[in-house]
Length: 231
Image (cartoon, rainbow, N blue to C red; front, side, top):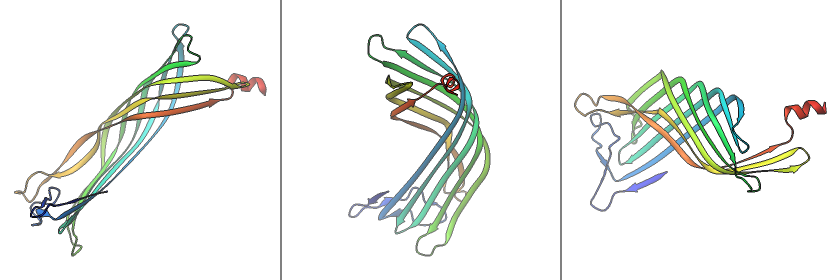
């Protein structure tokens, strides 16, 4: 949430308001609330390959499910309340590769990397509304539902890790690194084209790019072969 107050003798330009349906072109205060939700689930199978004594590559193939939603609500005082929203869900094939290189004579330290790509087939729900705050009357209501779309996705990570034995048959590993994930055309927004033709609107596609540090820890007890030997 963020609040912006106009300076003395000034005003805030209400750029999100309908330029034709209302005369509220400016306001004294603008209060914005933004909500973003992002869910991803992957199911995969892989094949490990050893490239020398210190390098391992794992090729992977599977499915990715993604749900992305964002909502922006702006209250103009004195003025209107404008709400825009975009929701996408999709599922599709995903391929990639994991790389791990063990650092020689470094006590279990290794470098790890990953690159993957997916093509998601899904649907968009996009909406825009504008309500007069004083009366509650809706003056703009535009919605586009169940729009089929293909969204390519790309991701990767690079990390420094450690792996060591912590018990009889148990291994602990940890990774600290940086990762990114991008969805091409992963969000949509309904915006005004002009204020002449009845405030005509169109739908704009935007790319979504997420990145940041990550910490991952794994505890492995037994492999499948060891479990069969125990039974």
